[in-house]
Length: 264
Image (cartoon, rainbow, N blue to C red):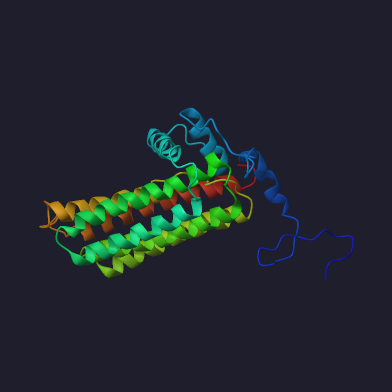
């Protein structure tokens, strides 16, 4: 029992509101605190404004990454043409596209090329939902949960896709576990004081989409397998994904440790 004069301490397993431990009080100076209001529409999200808006919303500055900047500007350009779209519906459509890609891969033959197109569509929808939400002032905590769940369902579809392209099932299971561990570690760190993604690693969602799309495109145009390696495209891309997941995991752990360790 706590004495009446003692403040309640932090407990990660308690549903009661408690004070954070003193070591986490030093975290706030390392993470952004000026996040945009959830329900305020933003009209000037073009060019640099789009990147700044994304960075504020996610608590992570990506202005130094040309790839991230190009992607953010692209989805915001598309979002301008969908002012009335519902972000949650776009998230759901992304999952449907990824699941449809799995169905196309089951058919085999040239349908694998259709699967590649559907994977790309799912990736675009994944970025488009957040862009529409930010531009229209519909960004909200529940929407972030919907987006995260849709992303994980999409990841399951991408792994299943590579297994269908003759990738080993055990490797697919290992890659899937690595993805969920990556996202769980980030979410847990955010739950105890880390604001933002911590680090934009090489194993983020866009990378996974690209790997799966390349696997489908390659399997549809070069069904004999990867030259020089002699592996099926599913195996080749699962191995690539596993390597990226390992590197990305190290990057994320280092970022979490840097942010949540007092005095660093």
